[in-house]
Image 1: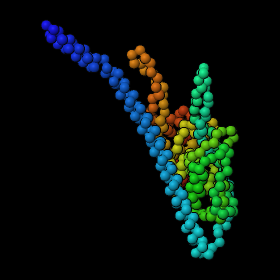
Image 2: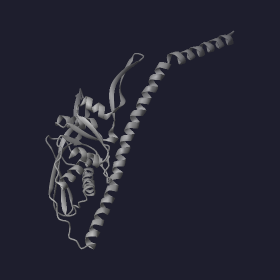
Image 3: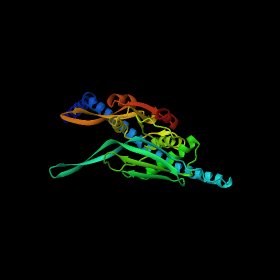
Image 4: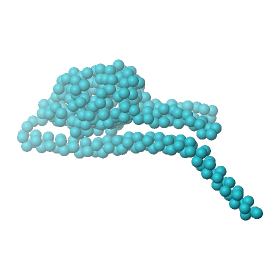
Amino acid sequence: MKSKLLAFILVLSLTANAYLLLFEQTPVEGEQVQEMQAQINSLEKENEILETQVAQNNKSLESYASQLDFYRERVYELENNLQACPAGLEGYAILQAPAVFQNVELERSGPFVREVVSEEGALLNISVETRPGKGRVLVQTTPLMGVIFQDAANTAVFVAQQETGVSLSGSDVIFSITADEEIPGVDGSSAGALMTLLTIAAINGTELNNSITLTGTIDNEGNVGAIGGVFEKAEAAEAGGKTLFLLPRENSELVIYSLQERRIGGITIAERVPEVVDAEEYIEEEVGIDIEYVDTIDDVLRYGM
């Protein structure tokens, strides 16, 4: 009798577990799968950004090597042809560029203090001056810029010489960066394409279209590459009165986050859910500035001059 009772209880337990598994847990499992997929998508996007940064660093190393070869070749040609150093060039160009910086604020809650970090956009005034000199690329900045920015300046001058066919070995190229408001120091290569445009304009004596601005890295081949902080830079450009914002085509997909709430049992969970949207459509609608994608410095020249 006892064994029959135990068998009955065992069958009843298995039946109850099967019911719960099939009918009660399915919605929760479905939500969990969606949540995990959203997290996977978010991590994949973040991984792409990190891979882009690594690629940019690799390009920087390649840039130094290519520039060294270029200048060695120029010196060799000058020495073998017994030519004097090319006459120094005088020129000037200026344009505003969007930048993103981190704003850190302290919030106090009772005895606890925590840092709240947000990203904000601002416009920097970037100018370039060419004058007779020794082929140096110089950067004077307020706020201070880092090594990566200096590298972008060197690449910009290299590409400008390739694009125009004009040697600057007898000239100094001086980039100046200032901000209308006090902002923390920023660094990066996102102004590379803009500095290339400025240098070409200074060499050719061409006036620039001040109603536009742009962002994007530049490599030795003149390709414009992806950057970060797209939305914040677009907001800064629009607030500064710009009507056209040139964006690398590699930034055509923009990840936005929306806050969604869901209930599991009696608990309400709020989470940030990522969504991939077309950058041009989203920014034009949300910010109100026209967007054009560019792939190379030649594309930039069509809009900038």
